[in-house]
Image (cartoon, rainbow, N blue to C red; front, side):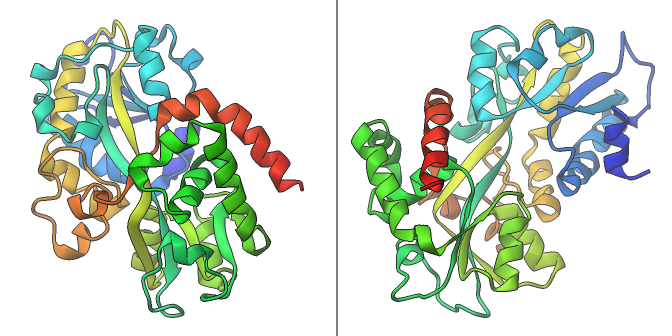
Length: 343
């Protein structure tokens, strides 16, 4: 049975190495469709943790949403949350306040991976990408908009989230000022006016693999794209796609412990184990996600450091997606985006 088939069946028991307590430590991820990442997590985290500690781990998958977290202490222990879910889950008492002294301490991690209730699992980014065989320069978002100088179609994800930020950066707004600008009606109008300029030249993509597909086919000259898909295409399809980290949009996925988990001690041991910098770094060759431990990038070979979303040089000009802004505004801005697409 394939990995995806196992997830469809409901759970994977990664290791059975010692007598379980009330039940096995249960880790709930949200990437069942991303077989590459799931395989990496199993190889680097779940299996080695069981081998090292004798604690059996069962892995399940979920599709997100706070309602699904309520009352899960009976069968879940550790859950992977998006930035949009983490703070509300913490505020509503659905997940535990972390005992940072038991999991390495706050200073062990980049600030982006530290919260009252969450610890960074990995970082991923949306980047500007292009085929270096067809376009040897290194474009910026300003170049992305310059159709006269660089003729050709452009690719963007069919979503308001991310595209407003990109439009403002292309219009000269510094990454650190993007969300302050978007919090005004004038700023949102400015972003949509910038998108208007590019609308006739846009090819919209939706699935994570679509961006590299339209790049590889030559349908577009440049595109926004998930960094891990660009790296995977270069590695496995022998593509020559470039990554522009300046103006990239990064997000952090977090581990959290379900409130009143009966396996709290084992959960803390797991979080301490997966937060080892060398172990986090070993995810990168398999799944192209960045570690949040401060030293996770320190000993990477140059080729790996170049594709790590959390490498200092790659973070320098990047923008963290503001989960709070999108919690408050995504519904109304998505409707405006759909109306804009229809006109």
